[in-house]
Image (cartoon, rainbow, N blue to C red):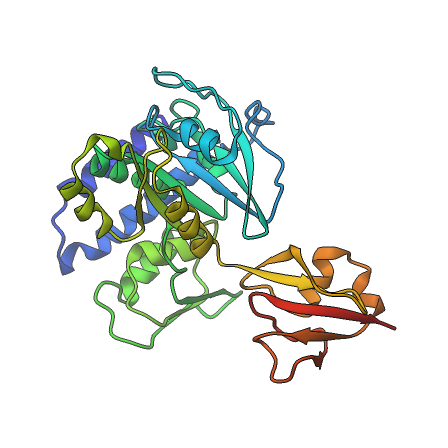
Length: 366
């Protein structure tokens, strides 16, 4: 029996099962089995495996990577060529783009790499079309733009989210607040620091037993679901922010546009007419959460044209040095920082000082 058949069978059983307290245990087990089968689909067992998809893996350049995901013919290539000035083949038939097309834009001093991924079809997570490679590239992005046709957005949105979820990509979510630690002996030690609506000790044990884990410490610090626990145990999930780009707004009325504007994480644009691009770029910048640090050579004015761009979670002086060159740290005596992160301008700081957006830094060597 193929993996796909097994997955279909489990999904059917889950659809048939009523959801209540009595069946929660059983459903948790089924979800765990499903997650295991999905993982086998993504990484086939054994064998040398075929090489990577030709022309799919694009070298990472710039400070951040943004991927365009969407069904065929929703205007991803038009959007890329109008944003970045890169020519990605555009035509009025589906599946025009067959490999990943990269483009780079400069925005607020940062270089942002845009990837136009081939259209995905339903069943991509099961390896249909080139879905598997497309979604594998999507996993490496810092931000995903789901490009939707404004005339049929919700149907597409649900399907694409389902495909990405099946591949272990979680959109606009935080990692579950679950402490999970395997150990050699001592059984399952289960503690919940707040009331749980779905999980209890038995369900947790049965889900872990499905993974052949019999000794572990599990701490639930928020109201978690079985899916959260499975994500935590699998450990190969990526949490990526996502913006829904509704394209082709030249085909709808103003009233409909007002409704669309109220949807969270959404930007309506027209790629063909270049409408609302500035709004889209601003939103991309917000979601990427990049921090710009300007450099100042001794005795000169700061260089405001080319900042060093760092991700929000790594903005210490140490990270700044490593980004420029790994030997800089050994030579660093201290740094002078001007800006929002210090009380005095300039202030003498060490390598652990955390900087904020648009700070100016001068390094003093030993």
